[in-house]
Length: 499
Image (cartoon, rainbow, N blue to C red; front, side, top):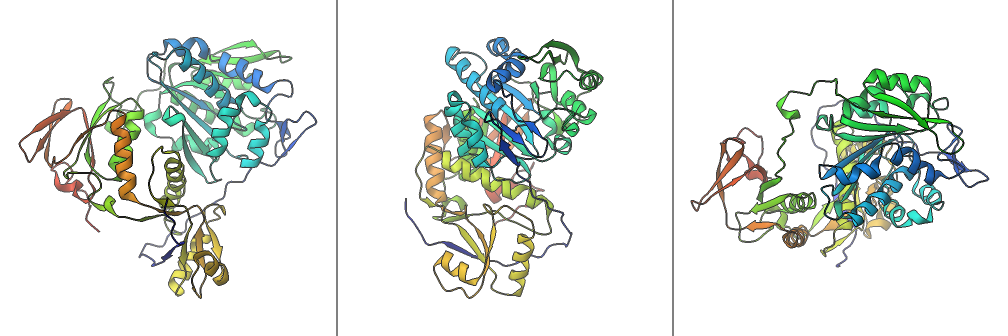
């Protein structure tokens, strides 16, 4: 790996509409460990898991309550989706992941191949506290260490962790679950196979046991979906029944007398009919990707890992001949005081990219040396001050005075700025070619020197026509060809141009 001096970016403020954006920081959990070594929340005065045997309680309540051991072998889809109301220490997730690994080892030819776990946490643990809590369960260490290695910064919104080379996806939503469930992609409606209704006791944290949450659970549950929770509180049972679940009591774990289980017998909510909410019922998962840059490469690999058949059509004779052919590109989050959408998207997109690049089993020149933007004039200083007011964690961005900036970048700056310590640079050309080579080993079909001229809809498929006169037919098509994306009739109105 080649190393290069710290990257310095000169901030040139863009012209934007001025709209005040309310930003908030995620507060980490404050906890202590009791005499038994169990983590206890100071905020809610409740344990994160049973003092008796938290691991066995999880297996009994959530895995057993949802009958996962008997459902996995007969599941008719390649993906099983579990949603959880409170992530906490991650015990439920780690226990499920361990069980899923055991299932995959015992049933390698089963239809079920991948696990998607969606969880919410308003007060996430710090990485250090997470590691301390995980010391309770040495048998979960192989999975816990992977989770700790990818543990995200305390940023609001969704953090996607790709684990076990994409076979396990963890979506961690940091924030209030009653607000976040409304932000879930509408295509998740009626897709969740099992719910883990967890959290601190209803008497300690009533905001986690609301009709709003119960209704969201019902909206997301597919027909036949199950749920399980450790509590047997009457208002919880009645609330879930009113939301549409059929509920029953079951013997509780250990000294607890009862717990609740439920099933979505028949979905009462209508499906969303707008075309952008439609999910194809086709079982054939194949696509064509038009392009040859970094987006095409990473998308190809991601789809292959999900069991898709992928064909890549590139106009050039080899990958990375366009913008992705640059020898060096800076990696850092774009921030703005005046654009809420940018501030929701780029911080978590940046941290996702870092996790993804670090996990790729390929070699490419890069150095996470940090990126610094300098406040070289009044306008750039004002912009940086606005970005720093967003209350972002220091692991993402922090202020530098002139002396600190000079120490960071190794040259005389005479001004301070903002630094992104996890940023750096990479070689897009090497990354693109290495990922396409890896994807080819995993089944990617490549067609170079294929310039697409038109797309023609034919019933449920697309016909691709190329300058050579050759045609091809695919069920889905992804256009990832940069500024040339609007050269087709279907995409001509897109306001895309070369920069």
